[in-house]
Length: 202
Image (cartoon, rainbow, N blue to C red; front, side, top):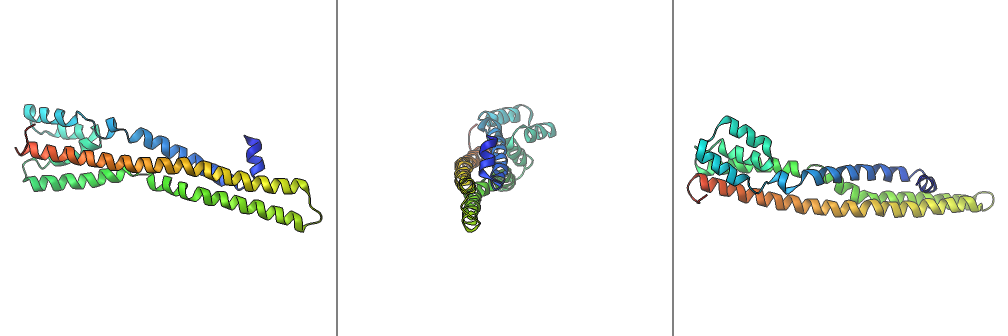
């Protein structure tokens, strides 16, 4: 592995740094954006059951807020349970926007890495080409210098694509997952409002 890095020249270190960040972000988002963690399927039923048994309490709201992102949205709505449905929905929408922002965290960085990695690979390719032409302009054509220039050019191009392709795939996947989770949480929150105000049976 070190031999490949050495053959690729100093421009490869930018791509290695980008790949480490990308792997870290992908791992973190895979762990964070799980349906069971963000929008637990049974949470609405549990909240309705507790509402019927004990009603809204500070302990219940605190527990919901810490439970999951969906729980935080429910807690925001239940704080205004005595208000009209419109007020309750507004508080839920505000909490939903903040939650969506948290779900999208780091995705811009991952998308940027996916976009700039081929450019970093191209930069390394240009450095390799400059070394090749510099060797030809010098005293004699050294095969070793030519080979090194070609290695720098090809390795950087390949590694740029190796970093960019998975980053773009996961970026698209996470964007779709955030959209899906946002819609699911919105539907669950609307159900809660309608059940609380007697517009829907629990």
